[in-house]
Image 1 (tube, one colour):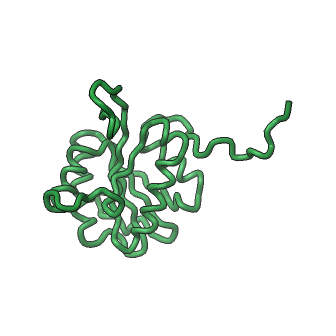
Image 2 (cartoon, rainbow, N blue to C red):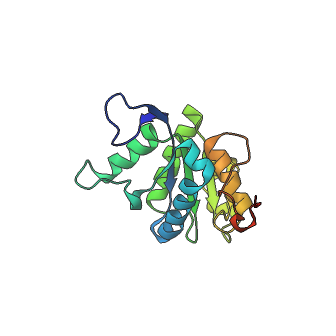
Image 3 (cartoon, helix red, strand yellow):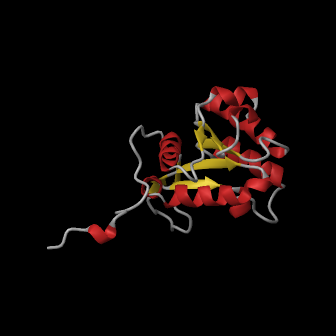
Length: 174
């Protein structure tokens, strides 16, 4: 999906963007916020212009159309990938509707559908059709799983770069 950079003037270059819709229940909002931060701040995420659509962090616009219409628009037209964070309560309430729409979009448009399971969450917490998709488990505590998530979202097949120079103090001196 291509979009111009927000705030860019007329004639500004078009920047390729990956926008992942991150569905989650209210009780898992803090985990979703942290996941958003890590995805967008990863080196590979920054290079790809990765943005995470998260309702609790500016996804829903006050005073605009109703929140249901905004969510439908984000899943149906804006996102290039769909992820659902399944935490302590599983797929409940509104998240079930988002997952169904995300599955429909994944089937129709072949966008990635990625279940994200918290550490103690069983795969059975996913709705039956969502279980067809390979999940990542505990990406907030497992760097390997975070890498898998980034690869799935960006569809690169290449190992992602999570941080710049993790051992800055060990640079060679000249």
